[in-house]
Length: 425
Image (cartoon, rainbow, N blue to C red):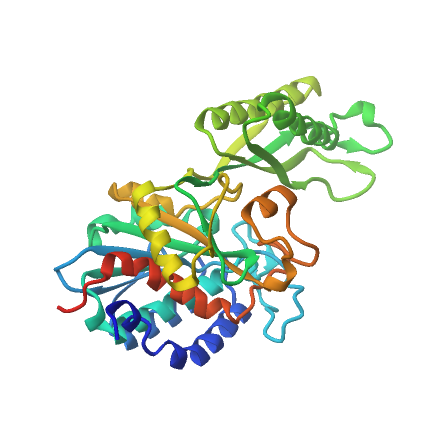
């Protein structure tokens, strides 16, 4: 048996327990920075596997370390948090849980982004690394990160991550998505967009709905802002550039005949070029303030940053190396090169940036291949998803258990093995 294949020894025997773990995690999602149950499961399993475990890193984060001083240090990351989404998959293990969000509201909670799959795959990987210790050399730092949806990586870094754990030579992570199971997709350079989110409060002057002339209506003001923001990308961003501006939340008022005093909005901006990012952010602020002025608002709007994700950048040399590892387990032609960065965003890159080391991030498929008659990155980027394939963050989103779990473990081991191969201690 070769060193490369010996990393996978015992995978088949692990799969039943990993499927059960995945179903349990999917049925019990937790909101960002509230992943207490998930973190407890992770820590217990890592200790049972023989890892040195540190809990409560950056809040609810868990870090496992296994290895020896000789050889490279490889960081592997999985994120743990769910989303405030009511599940509509109809799965027998669908979530029915609720939680309390950062604003104090009770909300439904679902693993609508596949983070339960990420945790399952990394725990399968850590089990095999521990069981097959003689097949590799070096050190692995397994990071189970809280709150990816709201910049939890930075919370771990602010908690002294770089000083408390072995300094990585490379950082690796993956994300399940609506592409065919058995396929991975990545690219050198920018692979995920930057993201900036804001809360905006518009101030009006409330009154009776029958006498709007005595008020300044913040709902009309907010509607004008929403519509005007749609022109930022269409009229201020070049056709060969990319940006997305989304108003994902708008709340105001309590009754149909009462004009309220305020309107609250949440705005998200995605961009893949630093110059475009600055231009779009400036345009958003300009429009919010100008519409308030044009409406005769009695007070300047409040614009409060919520969270920000930088561009996710893949090191070119490390990406070529990881791609070779992915192809070794998925097969030739099964690792796609993305034609450009995806408009989704990630905070994983903060680990590599904080330590000054290369990072590689890839997507792996969790959808039924039969639903993709034209399976290519160009077709998916250019034409969107086929009918019946939900995207991440949808109430219908859930990756297939099989073969996604097995292939996710193989992908992590295949990529990490490009640095850890050598065997012996």
